[in-house]
Structure formats: C-alpha cells, structure tokens
Length: 130
View 1 (cartoon, rainbow, N blue to C red):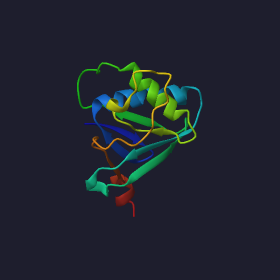
View 2: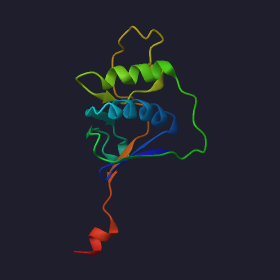
View 3: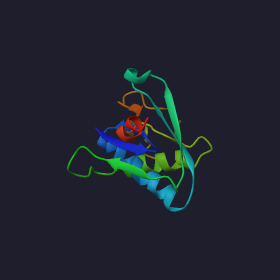
C-alpha cells in the first residue's frame, strides 16, 4: 500500500493505482493546472468520499510500498486523464472500469473495490510547542 501526501493529508492507495494517478497528476501540475482529486474513503475512515484541490505550488509526495514500478495500462491512464480534464476533476476509478476504446467517455464513478484511507497527521513539533 503506497501513499500520496499533500498538505498534511495522507491518502493510501494500492501501488498500481498510485502509479497511474502519479502519471496523471504530474502531467496536470507540470502544465501549471490546478484541479480537484476525489476518491471514495474506506469504511475505517467513514466510508464516505473525500476531495482535495491540487495546486502546483503545494508539495506533493508519492510513497510506494513495493520495490518495482508496475506495468502501466494506457487505457486506464487515458480514462483518468479525461476525468482530470473534466469539470468534475480527477475521480479515482478502478482499472476494470477503463474502456478499451479510448474514444468512448466512460461513466466516471468512484471505485468500490479499492482500499483508501485518508488521515490528517500533525507533526510532533507543533504538538510539543503548545
């Protein structure tokens, strides 16, 4: 299980999903584009939905649990890219929902089968300073 850390929020994704998200997110941020990232939360954090507004000036950290890069599915990257470029923003979807025909716009829904957990972490320095 890898993680994406953005402005003190840590979101855990499977490494394969995180690798595909990384490609799409970096593609947008390199162009200086801000956008919304949305995902479905795991039951352990309320089983709801969460979103974060990603901006190029805020540091972003990707941490992969595995030691090797997964094979990239171009159809999945294309689907996630279309989602990121939409008014809804990048909605995390499962690989199985990626269409074979890149010309068809898939119905973008949060993936139900992924394990995602988000939490806000505070640093010990800020706790001890109080």
